[in-house]
Length: 212
Length: 221
Image 1 (cartoon, rainbow over the protein chains, first blue to last red):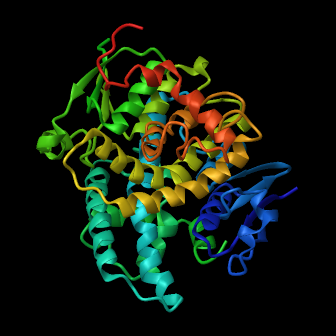
Image 2: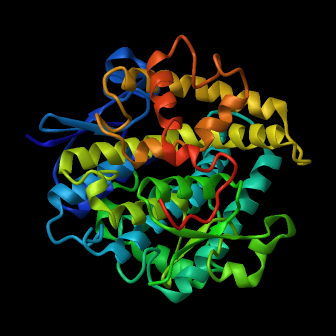
């Protein structure tokens, strides 16, 4: 029974799950949820995901949602020998991994996501940009990436010496902001540039970057 | 073995979250207060340890860690028998799902509304915006309707036993109740009896009650 992703191919979080499937060579079946038609808010879908967002997964009857936990589940179940999540027995490596995962979620995801909304989604829908908000969001994101620059000057990846999910989680928004919104977030930050160049050129990301 | 040092603020929200978990697991700790009012957390000496310039961080016998949920997970990992992070694969996946739900569906609105409501309640002279509070509470009401659906089928957010995912809802889960009365507030509505039941249980825990007047150094339990 293939791993099922109930999602929307261009969606950030659907691509995040697909990325990890590709990293682990887990074949998946993408069952489309029609976002433009509001299918994600229909009672049938809300049974799968009570918050009405994509994706949700079904792994041979085991169902869950939230892209980052799904990624962790994929590594735990299918990633024998994978270092994308440190061995839980290594408490220190795990703690540094969790710190990096938390940084992505608390410092990067919100400003990056809202910037993408303002700079890419709103124009696509013919809605006016909120220049003041964009200015504030850019200031926030830039200040966070300045910290990333310092951290990545001392270690190759956000969790330490090994590439983990904490690094990969950044891909959908970073790709969107650099390629679609045409923001230059990396030229003045050589360590961030090195890190982004490495994670974005991975074959798994290249396979799903424009659609899961 | 040096005592674990928690660098933060006695009344600060995120410091309280860490202290709650330390108490849950009976871990002795020393609170080292950071003079946030005078910008101590933005000075180079502090940024060496927490480069985002926020409180708290911990020093556990030389191991430095920041981000409260990472700190709480680290402490729970050192006490695996507590069950605060389930290890069975499916229970663990559902725990991670619940912890992520707290981060993506609860915290964004609860922390923003909660922080301002707490400032008002404490009487601090820091600007607040009633419209911002109201907007975030409106978002949170809808999220809690989904929580009601989840908690109508299970006792806690990750399943039948308490986990870090429940505790992560503190302290903002408490602060958002400051808009309303004890018998009718966003976490205690007649329309959401399961959320109310779950919330009441959370805030009755000794680990939460221990620091109602502020986090303090705790060497014995």
